Image 1 (cartoon, rainbow, N blue to C red):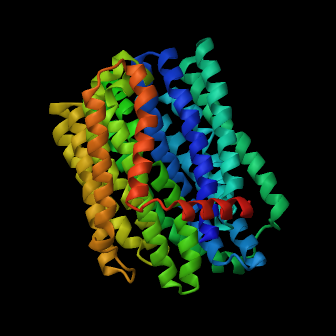
Image 2: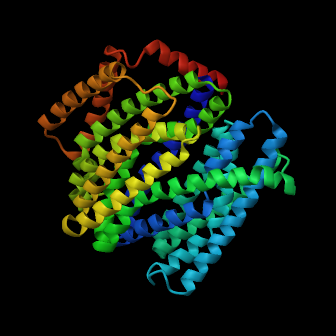
Image 3: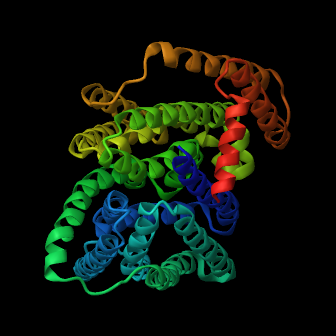
Length: 486
């Protein structure tokens, strides 16, 4: 458990730093560029993120899982790192070549082409960085990967905003994005060379480990692409059926809604390599304990952030994005409802993926994606961003239901109603009290954001301490353990 806590704390620190960077980046960006330009920026990055994920081939998850399973064998680990790195470079070069042919053939709309050429510079180095991250994640040294990732984000934000401000607009932003990956890719390679015997692997090593890396990566790619489309399909369809301005509005709802699954995403990143290690040792009960812990703290975090953002949706959009984005309030609240269930799903999925149920989870993700696309195609033309919010939230809920079905069929213990009911009841009490407080007091948007969040936090902690869901002594013990390990 101390190793899991250390991993969670490392990833939590990195994710928190990235969220704080984003919290500073977005409101500055929407005031430097126009609403239409921001919508174009969002749609280009949404499309490119899917392409970049395809180019990675699922190797981040494959490398960290397989390294975690062989963590005690340094020679085998070095071979896996070398093979993964070579495969990632090959994937990157292939993807860039295919994209270049597509651009020459004018497959991509002309207004996106200049931006795509710039972003293609990042693909190979982004692949290399994914292996660097996977290597340190697999060794349960996540803090190294997070430091590199946070450094890249700071570089991108600082350089990108300055270039946009002096007149380079989106060209400057995308140039900074590509250069940030080139820099961190080179730094990552140098760091890897200091800790591993990186060499050209033999044919026998490639046959032994290459197939395992590529196969698991391929299955992860199917789910990863489905998940990426699940996150981005609504944005792309709003752009297609509506305008860049509507896309900007919808993204202003998506960005904060996705922030509430911050803690579950941290747990998700820690669970794959941790579960792989426990599974290799045939420790089923350890995995059951891990699942219960993850579910508990995910529900607590999702309630804290979700209830707070739901109640303060309008003042948040007004202060953070500006008056032009308040129209996304209802969409944001719809997305929060679906995101709550999706956040819980993110905790159990890596457990299944690390224990032989990867095909089942990918099938559920593909199903949720198809449902999302169908609902958005049906609803967006008629209802705009509200329709996108409805379609996406329903698909998130159905993804949760599908993974619960997998859980019931797996060898792992499903949390009982007796265990979950008091936890949910406490969160319901918090939600009712906080909503009653916020909606009964009229203050300015800025004052509401300064007063209600700390008040809600104190209320949340108090209620969950009374119900026994946040045991103070246990919490102190965990913090002390993590600090000592660091």
